[in-house]
Image (cartoon, rainbow, N blue to C red; front, side, top):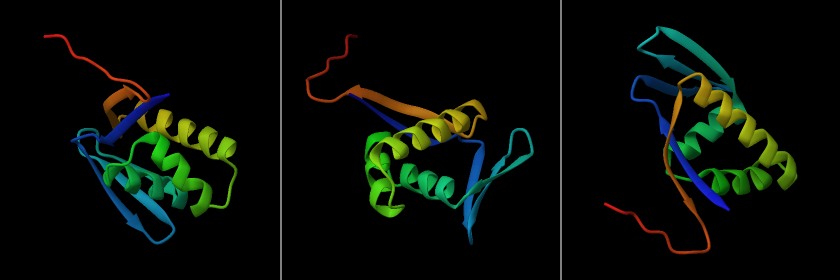
Length: 102
């Protein structure tokens, strides 16, 4: 299983306001609105949770199935990557050791 962590792009600012989240891309002057679930996910990424941890948390927070949470989380994360809102900070395989060559 791959454990991917994400963070906001350095040029993106995020605020959770009421039932939605607003993202401002400073480099493009874009304003992007996300629903409450998207805002919640961005908050979890800001807390340092990886994609798998965020997905697991979605099951209880939104009373959904694991399969639906996985689909929604993957779709939302991919869209935010494509919009330049998120950047991947790490990706590692769970269940084993990893090495880095220099």
